[in-house]
Length: 486
Image (cartoon, rainbow, N blue to C red):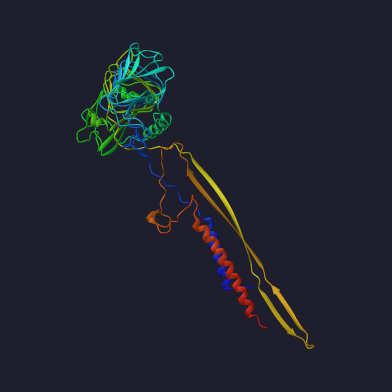
């Protein structure tokens, strides 16, 4: 039978439906690079909501505070040993826990290690500050008028070594929860450190007079920054060579308009004697972060000068026996501040102030292919009736029934998704766009909305077109039946 115009229209609609169904692939997923304060990654301006709680010294595991002070709050995840030391001077922070009347300035997740502490030593918690100790099984807490002491179990008020809280803190408060989860926080810190280390350098050191790139061997170099984020990458050998970084004429120096990330790419143990730098001072140091990638021991030797900026080494143990200071946050896996060969200087309150963009992902990409087969059966029945009268008066009736059409449509959708393994870290990729903003370009009128990565539009169109084609076939048969002469 020759195809009618109705048959041709139905065939075209079915073909269009099949084409739409096959091309119904989800658009590439989109995302944005991580933009975050690497020390205060959740809520930099809210000490209760942010997991760092505004502390300036954060240690994942154990610490020894032997000399001489931190001018702000300190959190240690493991056990704490100490010498003559004080915390909370100048700035106790504002982390006041429920039920307390004063901010907590010392958190110890484990126990106070009196055996490893210096004989006769006192760790003073200054100002209007409280302490929280996770394990008091080997200690006694003596709440005296004006002072609360934590001493070896069963000792008297004169016992040493001792933690001396220079505020009348109730013993129950000392044993209360600290609100810290340093293990989880350092998982985030390590991921952020990796992301920062993956950033390519955007600025480079220049020669002493600034007229050529630094040769890598001269102990004096110059540096100028551009507005926004600046990344400088140095190897351990290059860092060891540098003694002085002077300002480059015409370039910016660290501040609110230009912040500096120094990636120190090293493995194993590192003796770090930081260079004298042009941005000395509390305010510019709030805009500099030294990101050390090593998981070994980093030692600041006795003659090392002050570190101007935050020390960000979440995999490393830091041994600071330098008389110089750290002008910034201190984020390390383990810490010895001071010791037999040096007093360790001071940690000054200069919290890192900027949000930075990281450059890597810890997101494995998973590709899932889903195949859906839809079978649509359309049955069209047309009845043709012919009546013939013979010479004997007998009428003969012939009835013809037409056919069944089955169409199978297969739709294959491939979805690529990125699974984030670290909650605080989000990275992304930019989807390809159609040149000139054509169909499918982000934001174009023809870009379809998706649900869970699957486009409902094309699949629905395919079903509607299939049904439309079936209806046209049925109509064609009915018209042909009506036109059949009796």
